[in-house]
Length: 262
Image 1 (cartoon, rainbow, N blue to C red):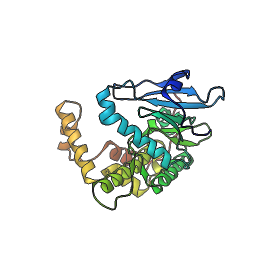
Image 2 (image 1 turned 120 degrees about the horizontal axis):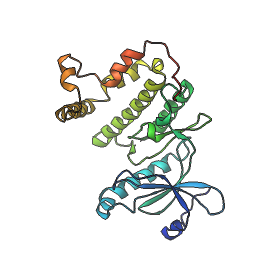
Image 3 (image 1 turned 60 degrees about the vertical axis):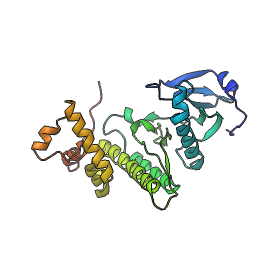
Image 4 (image 1 turned 90 degrees about the vertical axis):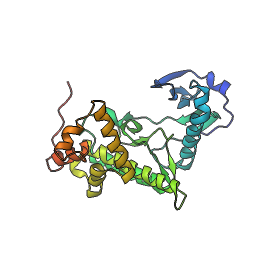
């Protein structure tokens, strides 16, 4: 499918669409799926923030859309990254549809090591192109029936370029977060395959700022009565993440096939 610069908002509104998923709140884009060009049978994803409040679109939303468009252009040749097909205006993106099921919908220990290695290799390739996803979690990773993987939702992408300074540190932090997300996925499905570096990312986080803000999150959660932080602190375990405890419990145990869901 060729990218078109001639698609307008008026043309877009004529395309029959079906909601891919509902926006969780007023700050989220509406994501729909439609056929474009009409009559070709080609499905596209339409990401639209026009329904968001104007002040949000101007101050934040359009910046995120530009960031996502830039990431898709930079990664156009990378397998598993959808192509940007059109941008009718600053509030909407038309993106290539890639089939697949979200990784979060797969039961524990059902994704093979081959698939997880493929995820890791493609994330490394994305980083080699100077882009970090920044919000890589199982809902943004697709796995199709052939074991091919794809990555969606690039609004938080960060770009390499600065040799030093805040932008360079932010890129490195997001790159490490991507690697930690891959390690978390591996911990859920094939924990014995975790490398020492991946275990370190899960146990200790990615950086001092990350650990500081994570610690503050635990403290505020405890203040709201939503955490066992006080009990953990009394046992000297307050600095261990749930993944650290899961590693200790699972990494040295043989893999046991997951029981089928009823």
